[in-house]
Length: 307
Picture 1: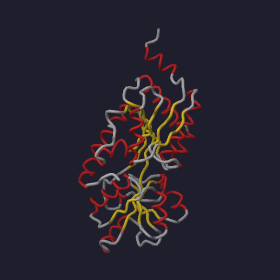
Picture 2: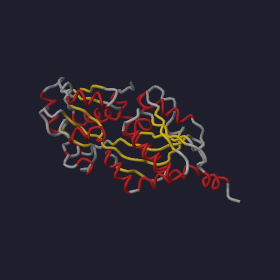
Picture 3: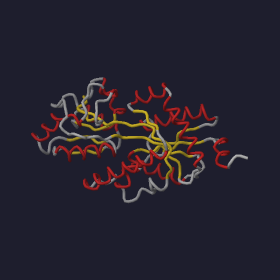
């Protein structure tokens, strides 16, 4: 007789499973989740599908994931916002990132980019800071996400540049206004900005990795432009509700780790702008704890609040 946990791991899954994405369809988080769901469906003998539950900065979908039955048939694609920042931005998220979820695996890391309208008179972060100091109260920055807001606040803190954030509900509207010249600057992900950068509709001033990245060749990190140590990276990770059997967690970790290591999956993620992830559930738990310790003080010091 096999122990109950081992037997469950061998038989799981026996029915359709969903991956909750707490954002709109078509965004980077959604696209990656669909890639993973497609591969899980191929390899695990049951359908894995994506269910979008956007709203409240990701809190609506994440709460639904936290409250789901802990049976392995509801996964949540969490992010640095839902599982690292939102508890400091909202009076109540409706869930605890630490207590209500069991981590499975880090799926990918997503650097942020500071970009500008091509007519903006700056070609680097140093130029941008100098321009802001020369024109106090004049230079706005489009901020289409929670992570963008945090990058912006940290940049202001570290440089002292008098820049002014303009919040947007999403990337599409923000980029339209930056490309149209209504707002000169934007902070967003490589995924959102890449096609516009390649088309020359925007120009990159800096990337938020510590070292140059092949994801955006030729663009210097902010950390190499007078802001040493500057690093802010968005991320995606899979979670299941607290109480999910450890055997199921282990099975999902092993399967998604295998998927992330597939050459074709790595290429798909890199093309989107994600560095493929990996690792164990305990490593993801420790990483999430470090992220909350890192960003909580920044958010509180800046007095930020969720929309």
